[in-house]
Image (cartoon, rainbow, N blue to C red; front, side):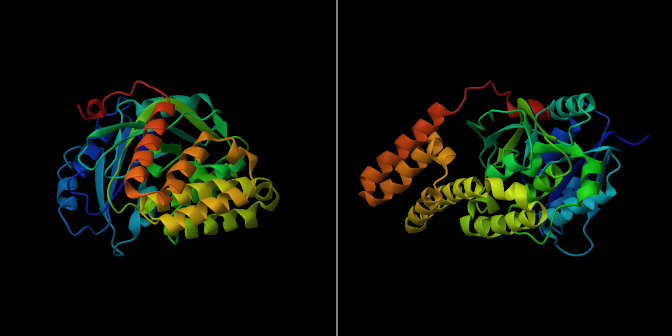
Length: 334
């Protein structure tokens, strides 16, 4: 009998974290699953740690034979090997809460019009300490191409469970991209039919924040976001045209914040100005815009005043964030 869901774990030099990730997949409340770990030619003990789970017949460890292909290439190797009707993606430094597979599959079995599901997520630091930060709840439960162009509500791969036939229909992750790879695939799936991306209002994924992550490189994010939008423009020109101005404004705001966090204050100010120049009313009505603007423009101030303003903006973001009971991430590892 084939498993209902295949959990795909790409891994490269994550010896300190991969055991926790695999364990969180093993300990799912829904047990009709397989776990496919793809070691992307790690140079540390990642492969040895993963092989230590080989006693579980549900766990398969694959080695990329073509050299290091990056996380997208590794995930694609897993997709090719997967037997499940559903695919879940779990990066080797992230963790699934114990009921994630159960909640997603229950929803998708009840909603045949849904091709991809995502949930809310929390974050932890490099050492596994939970930060207390969670994603805000979107105002809707179903999404289509235009919604995800304006803002990637879905998030990264670890947050997603989707139907395998949807990926078979649109193709795997685009390994030529250096960023925005997840968004590119979610948008292609959104092209299949109307409102086929569904949101589950529970915190079911925990992302690990680490130094050097791609999402912190605003220049790489900018280049690849433009590539992804160009691909969609060629595919769905009328639909993209309707929302491209707002999408660009919001992404420029996002880049401004990333540049600010990286200490590149001149770039952050320029990017924020470009965002405002788009004259997108939804941008101006979003409180996040003004919190970002306060922090970025505060970089003109003396260092002590700037630091105080930055702390105030961070506190305000935390106060505006919704309060949700989050199950301890360690519960997933029991």
